[in-house]
Image (cartoon, rainbow, N blue to C red):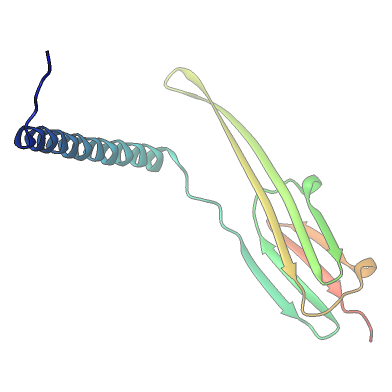
Length: 147
């Protein structure tokens, strides 16, 4: 037995499939938007603001000075490297806070990494470079190369 599908019937079937697909796509899009809205709201509620660093770069004539304001760094993790005209600074901070809240123990862990690369205006004397971290400020002094 052979089934015969007329052109009009085929067009009707294709139109119906297209309509169903459009409805399904619209519902999926609505669901994705709702999911993203709820996920974003949850993140915003739980997240603390991103840690920002403030930087100051000065040309003091015979040397460059860079100050990076970044509280809470572990001084043992600070690495300063000079190669040619490139200054690299890296540091980390890992803190753990344990407290009692509503009769239960709450542990919070925070991790922060600082990683910066700077192109200096001129070459410096890397052997004379000095850095210190005090009161949340990393200060780096880079004497200029004598020409």
